[in-house]
Length: 99
Image (cartoon, rainbow, N blue to C red; front, side, top):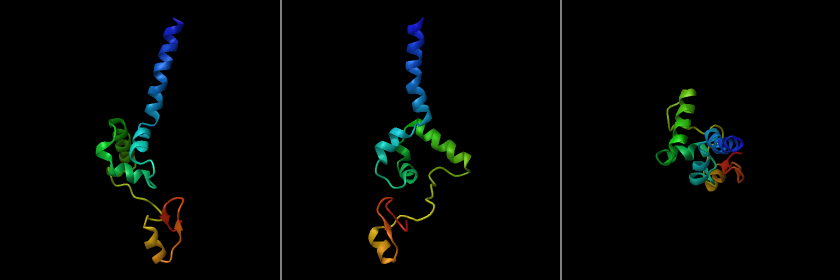
C-alpha cells in the first residue's frame, strides 16, 4: 500500500508542474532569448503545445483580448541605430529603446 501511495505522488508531481506552467517548454524552445516573450509566443502560436494554447486563449479571454494581440506597453522595441538616431538611450539589458 505504501508503494502505491508513493507511486501515485510521484506520478502527480510532474502533472501538477506541467499544469502550473504549460508554456514553459514552448518559451524555452521558441523564445529563449526574446525580449518580449508574449509577442514571441504570439508569433509562434501555430507551433505551441495544446496546453499552452489553451492557457493563452483562456488568459486572453479573461482579459477581454483577442488571441494574438499582445501589445507591449511602455518603450517599444527599435533597432539600436534607430534609437540613437531618435536621440534616445538604448537599454542593452532589455533590448529596447528608452529604458
